[in-house]
Length: 269
Image (cartoon, rainbow, N blue to C red):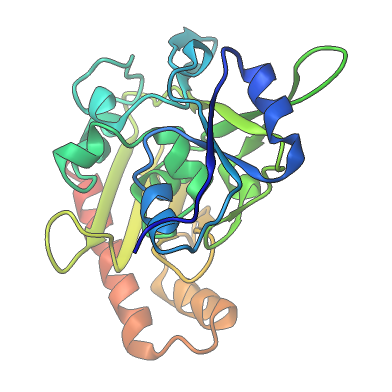
């Protein structure tokens, strides 16, 4: 199947891109690894595509106070290859290495993955447990209008975010990960490279109370539990059953098993 006809635009700055998108018919595209298939299936029918992969403002990475800012158009492969400052003790390269296939990682971008908000994608779950934030920019007559949101406030459902039609995700802030913390991640796939059917991420800080667990690959947004009961299977069983009444005991059991595997990996990583 072929996509519906659309116009193609390039701009030189983020501010210009935001102005272009004010018509509500223009969608940004960078790597196109998620949007491309949707266009071909006609699940997405924009009047125009705006190429933002070439914007230098989205290609930068820098250390800032408390963490690292990663430009939205940085590819998974660049993170995998260590071309991005890593303040996570190797977490980001490990996750990037496990995304699909190298050809996809060479074009797919971290910002595009988050903006697409596929529940089975790796970055939403991983960055949520790391307490990361996204930076959005919209048009403004007095200068750039920016807002900063935690992932839990940005992703609202399966392939749903709070980003406005004329806003662009420009960067991701990843806070520094202390050396004495522990991280574990596990996803269940039928074969290597495909989207996960269940996934979980576990973060354990030096303080015993600093415990976070995130479940991804759900029918909606990632689910987060923090504190002493974050690793309690009963707590998760009740939470999943309440959020998704149609989820059967087997599906819930699979997700609890995946969480336990992520916990095991946090003991070794």
